[in-house]
Image 1 (cartoon, helix red, strand yellow):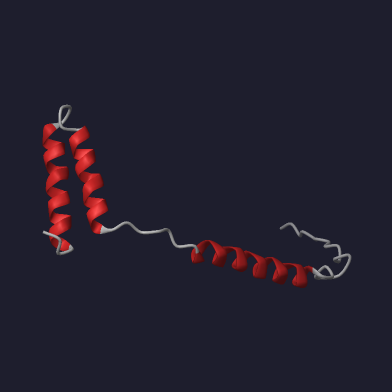
Image 2 (cartoon, rainbow, N blue to C red):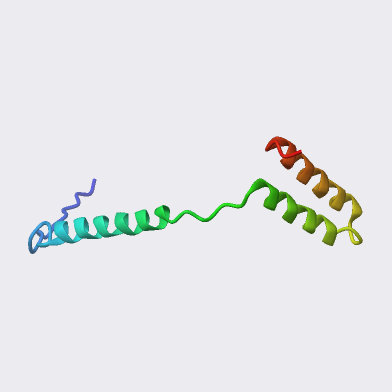
Length: 87
């Protein structure tokens, strides 16, 4: 049977570097502040009529290349208007 002896050197220096907790806290506060700035800017929404019109224009552009897809898009625009009480 063989015996193994391991020698481990003691840690040199402080266990936690000075100021690291404060630097981590400052980073977290800055990160959250920047994340909140991104969330507060709400994009301006379009009305249901504008959305339906854009879908109809897209359907019109596919009319010659893929008539089935164009018909599906036009039907989706009609359903969108019905859903929002416009038709």
